[in-house]
Amino acid sequence: MWRAMIYKELRELFGIAALATAALFLFSGSEMRMSFRPLFEPSRSVPFLGTVFYYYFAMIAVGFTVLVGFKQTAWELWQGTFLFLFHRPSSRADLIRAKLATGLAVYLICSAIPILCVAIWAATPGTHASPFEWSMTLSMWKLWISLTLIYLGAFASGLVNGKWYGIRLLPLATSLLATTGVYFIPWLWISVPLFVFSFVVFTVIIQHVARTRDYS
Amino acid sequence: MSHAIITHQLTKYYGDKCVVNRLDLSIPQGSIYGFLGRNGAGKSTTIKMLMGLVHPDAGSAELLGEDAFSIRPQTRAKIAYLAEGHPVYKWMSVGEAVDFTRQFYPVWNGELIEQILDHFQLPRKSKIRRLSNGQRAQVSLALAVAPEPELLILDDPTLGLDTVVRRDFLESLIEIIQRKGRTILFSSHVLGDIERVADRIGIMVDGVLRVDCPTEHFKESMRKIMIEFKEPPPDFPVCKGLVGSWKVGNRLEVNVVGYSEEHRRLAESLNPIAIDVVTMNLEDAFIEYTRGSRRALPYFAGDMSHVESNDLQGVA
Image (cartoon, rainbow over all chains, first blue to last red; front, side):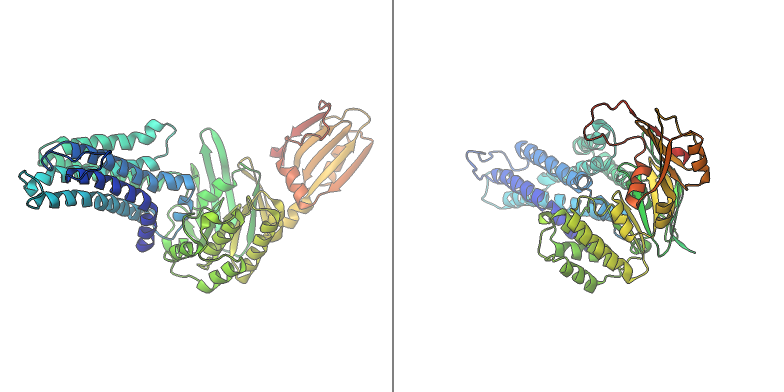
């Protein structure tokens, strides 16, 4: 079951993942002093200390996670294929787990590669006239991991059955708040438990909604 | 006799509307059950409740002896379900859909699926999104029967198919069904489809199961009584078995289930000039039974004021 599900999800997410990875590489290239005129000028800031890279990474990664989450749920609902999928002889919880695992892996891998590329470039002597320590990348990794909550929020929003868009989008709005909290709270002893708590809550909500909603 | 499907007081509301009303259904193993009803009668909702895809507001359902809402994957593997509209992943090719589905099942008859694909002339490389509705239905059928299910639940499988494709699909279905003593629940609003395959029918009208009997029995028990009068006719008295009555000019048309001498006596008590009792074929019987007060407009409708209806289906 897992092999079939992972293959299916990867095939369905390929387009979004390719597009998002290309966009992330474009901004990473700018951070690595590459020129993409007339789109972008090469960045002149110290790697991982300027705000532009964070800003663009966050913008693209948020879009990426939201699209992945909705594609895995709202799109299946719209196509009616949940009726096909949920009749397969596997538990609904396992099918949702397979979707979540694949979606998370796609986001985490596709968005980690550009960050790693910039970090390796920055760590290579002679590439830029500024200091570099690996610890300077921690903030970026924090942003990277905290955005997984937005993926879970979008996944939940795609599944929630509500009459009003407000109700449907509530999980996504909540995940934006949680992500902001996790990223901006500087104390790890608060942000790490907040992240773990939010992650577990969203996963439980997703499983609950998937089990109890009507697929009519 | 053991039953493949049992429901007890199964009920579902959408908002204030009761779409399935206290449904009690028992389908014996090995039977082919035609589940009929007009669009919106509650057939699809019932089937989705049986499949655990829609949660009932009350009541319970059992499939192959297990509660439909907590059915084990092993039991689910013995149940095939063709959803309305044949939802399959359109980006997949036929071969990919087969390979994807096969990985979920402990039992898979690869020879059978190849035979079916070959019979329908469906190349494995064809993309599902490029197939016609009929071909997609054929792919769905092939995927449904390959795991050798004991129970097939087909939700309007011929919906949207043209006459020729529908005939071909049904003939293939009959052939597949007859190979083993499978239980089939086949929903449709096309009576001809049901007539070909079902040995028993159930008719849903506005969420209520009004008929549950052998197909032949239903056909034989429906009668239309045509009562002619010299002047505008009176109302037909409410009685057991009365489905509905319509006044057309000086004629009163009455549909009854289980026609008996009592119905004839009631007709005679209205002092008509003539009484004619007409038998109906299955399709006419179904139409008369399910359409209630909504009658077709006359083709050259000038004055409709002389046509009145009296829908008394609840009495039947």
